[in-house]
Amino acid sequence: MQPSRSLLPLLAGAFSAGLAALAMTLPATAQVPAGPPAIPVVVSPAERGPVPLEIAANGNVAAEATVSVRSRVDGQIQKVHVREGQRVERGQVLFTLDSRMAQAQLAQQEAQLARDKALAVRARADATRYAALRGEGFAAAQRLEQAQADAAAAEATVRAMEALISQTRLTLDYATIRAELDGRLGALPITEGNLVRAGDSTPLATITQTDPIQVQFAVPERWLPEVKAAMAQGAPPVTAHPPGDRHPPVRGALVFVDSQVDTTSGTVQLKARFANPENVLWPGQYVNVVLVPRVEPDALSVPVQAVQTGSEGSRYVYVVDAENRARRHGVTMRRVVGGRAVLEAEIAAGDKVVIEGTQLLSDGARVAERPGRAAAPPRPPQS
Image (cartoon, rainbow, N blue to C red):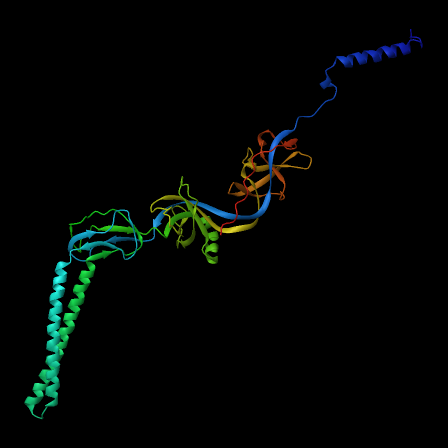
């Protein structure tokens, strides 16, 4: 039996009222479905510009020159003019030996020289007189030859005595021991009053040159082409910094590349020279070395914290697009310089890369930028 047409409007109205009542009982969140909230992130722009190629290594400081001070004559140390560890200059007096015996010998030799010169003058006068009185007889010629020989012998005696006096004066000069180069003294094992000899094996002191100074270090042989190309253009810059030292890195230049590669370690030995007036570098000290063979003029770089590593070791970054969504981009990281990673990637300068909040992101996730610490700018190229 079908309902009559007069009941249809009543049934429709009752159904609508029921739907309205049901809607009123449902929670408000179920009425309009919403998407996941945006993930807060900190971003920094990718940049293009000059970035130095840095080769990091470990090195040791070495003095360019070291002199062991020894006496060249025998004598007793009369005076020590310096202290242990003192900085000395070339020509500065270090020790004075007792030279009274040499001075007495010099006085005796000078008196002998005066007598020999007087005898030489007499002999020359005799030779001149016999030459003027020379006759044709055999006896006169023999007497002249004898006078000339005596004059020559007297002059030779004078020259021999002059040489002996020069030797004695040199001995007196050796009695004053001076520094042979600018540098710093080590320990002084011998004090005043001790007798020293020319053949002693123990040095009186050691002088180590500290300014300029060298740093020896080794780099893998794969960097050898870069190093050779840089040396062909001039001495490339090198910085050295002792670990934990509060001074800024010391700047120098590469001066030596070894003629062969060490086959046992696969490295090549290098040396750099540094000005060291403040003695920041000390002989034998361990230092961190950075060699800059060249500057890459147009490198793409991002803050190093933006680069993420996937499960298979692949590298990627998240770039925020115009719709505030994070897009994953695979990258190849070539090196890290001054807190920034140099990349090979399809990223343009100015693209916003995520540096904080990446652990919650996925490709296409909505993000909301929030302020954070400014990313470290790329370091200027070293010259």
